[in-house]
Image (tube, rainbow, N blue to C red):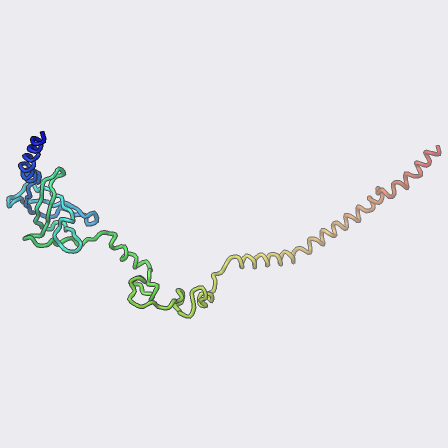
Length: 241
């Protein structure tokens, strides 16, 4: 049993492995064409194959291309319409390129476009960012070629003080505030009202005085101090009777 098992294993491995390996690998095909489109940010695109093995292909076939398959230096990409030569294979997903070169096997020309993320620093320059070391507008502090400079006031660029103690900043006149105007207005209103109020109390006082004088006789006539005196005799007379 052991010999039979060993015989099966030894008979299958040397006889099938080379053929299976050769049969499993798809044949490498040669083609030529031009770049149909290429996404520089994602790093892939498609080649429009117009000839295969020297014979024309009509209509052209799309061949997938990844930036890792491009033969060139630096940032790898393809320009739309750029002529290329390549090797490719057939896979379950379609036609995939294995190595892409320029005409004659030279390096690819590539696209001038770059991902948007690479140009973010260039967009920040017009916003007013500056180097905190030397005050330059064309670079940041980490890119400054000068040695560390003494700290300066961010308001007047003086090295004698900081922005918190800047005399130029404190001497700037404050904008006119409505609060002071409001106070002046209220003071003026108070003074004018004070000047206008005296006649009214006098008139009211006179009125009260007159009313009190006019009412006083009546009140004396009907007041409580005189009532008991007047009622006293009548009460006494009633008692006598």
